[in-house]
Length: 124
Image 1: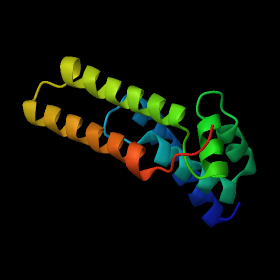
Image 2 (image 1 turned 45 degrees about the vertical axis):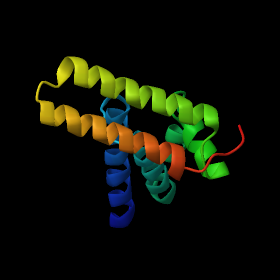
Image 3 (image 1 turned 90 degrees about the horizontal axis):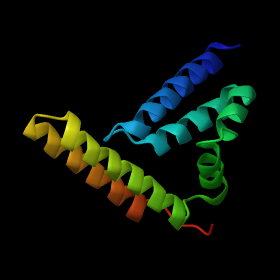
Image 4 (image 1 turned 180 degrees about the vertical axis):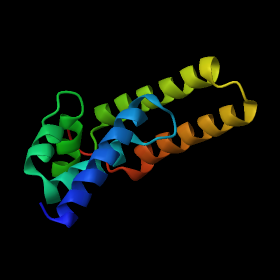
């Protein structure tokens, strides 16, 4: 394996790991990280790319986004429900500092607006 491919695998794995953390952590955008990971794996490791794109949980969202260039309304609703749900849970039960609550709520709002207005809506 070349150094370039090795770095792509390393950064792809880092992006996928952060994407997994982002599923449960407000402020970390999971979908762009998984898309980055898929891109890096496609350039370096067909096996890892296949595993990511065919994953039961996130694979259909990645392949749909790559094939269609956007997200369906259903996917956008699911993404926003989970994102705003985690922001709500975090701010109510885990974050004690008011300034951090404001940051979490702001990032959740920005993330939601990006999904709604920036990510292209495609047919299901």
